[in-house]
Length: 79
Image (cartoon, rainbow, N blue to C red):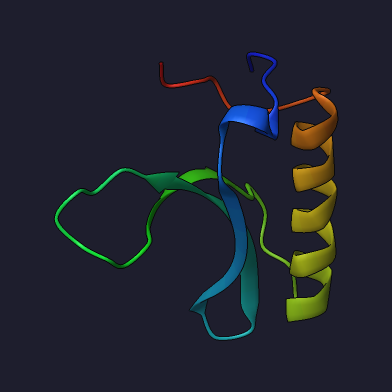
């Protein structure tokens, strides 16, 4: 993955439960949609392994967000 920082990005963290009892963290990146007053986000980076609890997925997602913020890790920039 290419190094990046949050300085030029708006990132949100969410936890999804696609299968009952299996939780995945997802980092979302804000995308520019000029036709709406609502905030729009697209999936940017997600967990590769499910967690058995919401809180575990959230904690691992926060760790991923901290890595991105510190520049140690992060999805490739999209321009």
